[in-house]
Length: 498
Image 1 (cartoon, rainbow, N blue to C red):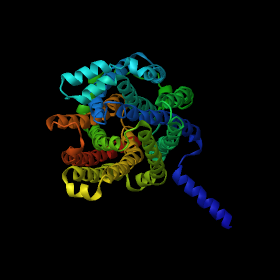
Image 2 (cartoon, rainbow, N blue to C red; image 1 turned 60 degrees about the horizontal axis):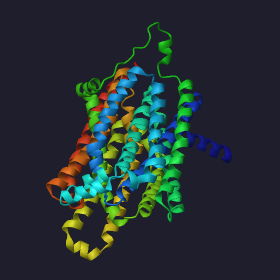
Image 3 (cartoon, rainbow, N blue to C red; image 1 turned 120 degrees about the vertical axis):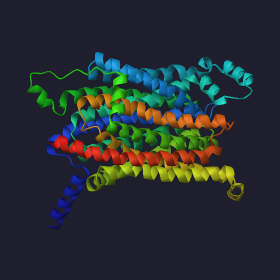
Image 4 (cartoon, rainbow, N blue to C red; image 1 turned 90 degrees about the vertical axis):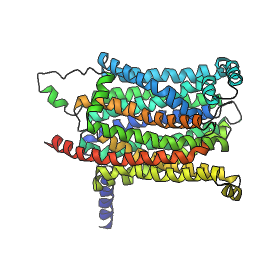
């Protein structure tokens, strides 16, 4: 009797964590596998992109805002234009395959051609002349020019997360899932990315230590080998899923003589959809605010991280361990809390967790950073360990921010697209997810670049007090936008139910 009760309790507990019905197992498994593979590639690229750039000679963490604000954002606009053009000419599957192969080609080019010959292809002589000619000014801009191959890799890694994950993957998922499906197993799909992060951390750390006494190029090439095999697995998994999973409402299309309308996308149409829709506009505010609030803290934290760990091996080791714990905590939250909170308290409460946690922990970090530059008595009392303490607390904020983003923000934001019509899903999502996210990251970069120029400093650390104000304003706007989205989401859900 006790054994039967225990078995019944276990089945009920398993149903709470994995609320999947009998006929959905293959569908969910394929979506899980695809999410894991795409996230695994992103985690490896993200772990490497900062290390190779920040720890390079004559470089620093302040180069990152320049890349995000002045290079990646304009490229993102071009990517949206190209995506819109290709979407009109190619099938969705063909666009998916070609995009993955294009990214794979760039990554292989960097790892096996450009990076091994970095000294030959980097314009060090020209960069040195520019440094002398400008009298030591604009050093971070010159560093971006000097290390253009690392900048290229940084751009590819950033765009992989936006294009492959947020645009291609979630567009496919939202097309084959209903709102009720999302409430049941979107948390599980998010958890697949957390598992990828957990595996990536020790993997990167293992290869970093294995080649710690050799050139860092061996670590790069070994990890890019994993990226190549995963990209091939992504192509096969998507092919199988695309031929197995039927889109939501597909049966309706088979019963009607009218073929589905072909969408003719343009960047202007996408932006117009966002500008004329209050609902999409508020989602855009959420996406921009999320990117801005996380990156405005991360930029300052990475400056301290470079100060504490100037060597590539030490820097990479710390980041790898941080990613591992981020994955562990995000997985626990996604499996045991995220879905339950959504079903118990609703969309609005779940969506508001991210701005509250990120706003509070980010504010505390900026206060610590501000005290280093403006409270000499504290610096004298704590001593040289203050930088390490700031790095550790910044790492804790980074873990909290990304875990909360993966578990709560990503899920609730993607759910918000489901009740929309097919045209708005594609046009609105392309503009909001790609340009909105990039605008948030670029916005934080523009703020930091402007402050560096106005204050005539090469370090972002003394500007923590001003950055704190931007963080508070951003998270308040984010919090308010979730309320507006929630009101219209109820209306759209009721319409979908009818």
